[in-house]
Amino acid sequence: MDRRSFLGRLGLAAAGAAVLPSVASCADGGFTDCPALDNVKESYQSDLLVVGGGPAGVCAAVAAARKGLKVLLIDNGNCLGGMGTKGLVGPFMTCYDAKGERQIIRGLFEEIVDRLIKEGGAIHPSKIRHTTEFTAWITEGHDHCTPFDPEILKKVYDRLCAEAGVKVLFHANFVGPIMKGDSIRGAVLLTPSGLEAARARMVIDATGDGTVAYRAGAPCVFGDPENGRVQPASLFFRINNVDTDRLIADVVPHLPEFRRVNGVSYRCLHWRVAQAEAAGEWDLARKSVNIWRSVEKDQWVINCTRIHGVDATDAENLTAAEVEGRRQVEELLNFFHKYGPGCEKATLMGTGSTMGIRESRHVHGDFVLPVQDLIDGIIPEDNILLSANSIDVHGAMGGPAGGLYMPIQKDMYGIPYR
Image (tube, rainbow, N blue to C red; front, side, top):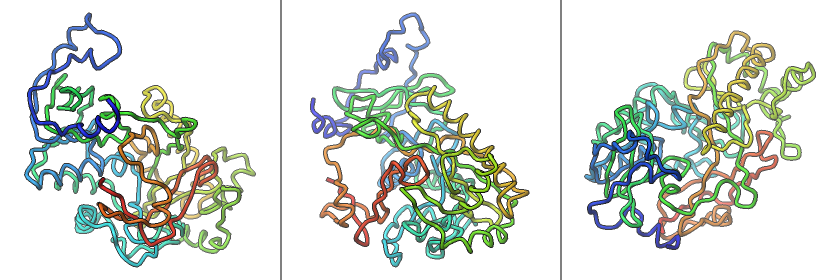
């Protein structure tokens, strides 16, 4: 079956009885000597199964439930939000056009932000301008970001799903698809209750790694199609007890020095990084620090670690990356204590409970959006959303060194439904 036929039929055929495969058939080898793997309990039946509880999964589930579908949303963690909660990745990037004049991303995103603000968990993007402490003093592509509190975001997602009637199941690991011919009719899950079958008329893959599509046989490519390389991963962390006024006072006089040299970014605290390097107390790849002020004045989000060659689809590789990420966090915390004005007494609030992955598998769809369409600001007839984010492929040094950065030439571009 070709790619178009597969994706065209994926989850769209008429509902009917599907043959539940033994879990052994989901793996390359047999497990006839392990009876436990044959005990799959029939547990869930829904119109739609969404695998992955990040922002995409939450919004897909809520939108479907509001249309009257019976929805099951599963996640392998203990909360919704994905990278924004478990990964501590923040802030939300711009929802405005390239000129920073008009908000173009609304819908459920705006509803989530409004709920966050009501609970004291966000600052509205209209109040956030580029080249400030809320954007790590970055200018390009960082106008009207949305700082948020990840703990409050967890609660907002919980309530959003509950109000829409979405059934949420945490601690549910996707094992393999239940297939009827070439159509996915659900999934086998591993939960604390054991192996369970979740049947559905349709399945949405919101795993981030294309796990459902890949295991169902959809064509995928890992990383760069030419060399298999992936963008570096990052482990985010948060600090508090920062004298923010002192930190800002140290940064602002150096803003005219912010620059890129051969693709290497010299931005926030690059002069302090140079001091640490000279003292032999800095061995990270980056030459500056991305540090973002959060909702509370003394709290900051740090995006500075860089772990290369991370295969998010390989457990041992990902384990090593998590350990290396925490090592880098410790080094960075020591740096802030010694070289960061106002950070001498900063405390570690926490590291992401999962690695921030920028790239792993890419699922090959029927249509691949051309890069030039984004740059030229093409808005197709079958447009489903607008965006103004630049093309930003991260390289080794924290910017586009070894990567790619291309700002768009128009106010915005569209993404087609096709």
